[in-house]
Each structure stands twice: as C-alpha cells, then as structure tokens.
Length: 213
Image (cartoon, rainbow, N blue to C red):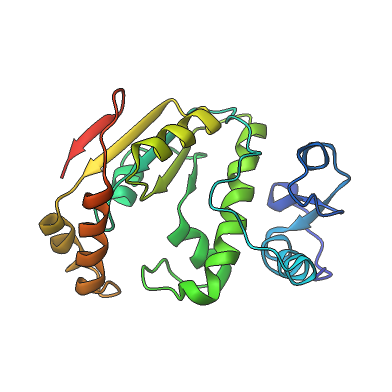
C-alpha cells in the first residue's frame, strides 16, 4: 500500500485480502497477502472499518488457544503490570498491552493518557489480531496485560487462549496512587477512581497467582 518493499520478511504481516467479518472459517482459510506492519495496522484496517461500520469486540469468541506459553497479567491501573512483565519477558516474547499498542498506532512513546475516544477502536482491533496470531507462533512466549477485575472474565480469557498462568496483582488504591505519582502522564484522580472501581468489581479465583501490591 505504501509502495515500499521489505527485504526482511520478518517485518511483514499476514493480511486477509477479503475481510473475514468474524467468520472463523474465512479467518483461518484466507486468502492472504503480506503487508508491512504500518500499512496493515493503520491504512488497511481503517479502510475496512469505514466500509464495514463495525466496532471491535472486547471479547472475541473466535480466538484459538495460544501455541506458545501465555501468561495473563491482570490488576488495577498503575498496579505494576507492565513492570511485572518487563522483568520476566525474554527476547522474542510478544507483549500484548493496549498502551503499547496505542503507542504503535499513534506513533511516539508509550503513554497512559492517550485519547481513548479517538484511538480505542483501532487499538482493540489490533489487540484482537495479535491475540489471534498467538495460535500460529512457533517460538518464544506471550504476555497479555489487562485490567479484568471479574473472576469469570479472567476464567474466560484463560480458557479461550489456553493461558498457562493468570497473575493478578492486588495493588491497593494507595499503592496505585504511589505508582501513578511517578508518571507525569497519569491523572491521580482518574487512577484513584478507576482503581477503586476495580476493587469493587474484583473477585478472586482458585488457581490464579496472586501478587500482593
């Protein structure tokens, strides 16, 4: 789409020539083409969404289990999920985090105050595509960061993606505020309200790894 040829094929993305529209058979069967990541993640997906007028689903029930070890890391905002993953990931691992995805779509450094009204749908579409790609990976491991206070929803994600572990960082509201104070791009009031809401909705679940915060 951009007219630039990539000699390094690892920089290319498998793209559906015909939009699958959630049809599982078409999603896995193709036909496919390769695009560079910026064209696939930006230009192509924006064109398809404008044509379809559809919104990205928060819970794509057509996903297949990950082919590589996947760890889900949940917790309130500013709990330390990104740090937990960064301290454990290895070269070649894939990290699926909305803040990181938004930074890639918008351009620039990873921030927590990105415009969700303008970019959330783009980020969710890209997140879902990355989750789908896990079923075709052949090496490394994967990490998936999300808020998800609901025990039932975390169970859904684990079953759908075949995650080997679910880690929940139980950071208190006070701890979240302490972490947020270190980031210039976080609103203390927004973090406090969101973290308090997370705790009101939170439920523990047997078999998960709980990390005190």
